[in-house]
Image (cartoon, rainbow, N blue to C red; front, side):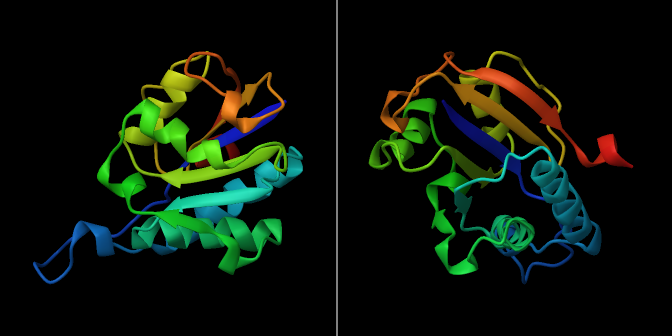
Length: 166
């Protein structure tokens, strides 16, 4: 059994001037707090990821680092990819897992909307059309090897948002 955690980055600042790009947007204080709180809930559910992958946009990496702190996961082991920011198809997303075999049971991916919500809908058994910042979907796949995960074959175990714990 393999479990995929699909995480939308946490709450970010707005762009107020032309000196900053969308890619450079940083988390707000609320974003840091929501990241920590959601990560703590995941830890309580005993669903700590063995591996963390993130978009390389500033806000996604900041979210990943907050999760890593709660999970005692080494920050320097967070894998990051530009394509998770730029947009991708389900096939391109699934290709990310072809390098893994059986060594990890749970992998977390931190990304952006609309793509992270689309992946939750395309891979799992339930649709979540509202996917707010810091939301997480856990999808289980009845496989032993990550190379064997496919679209529409996962079972959505749960979907949580920061509002669920306030």
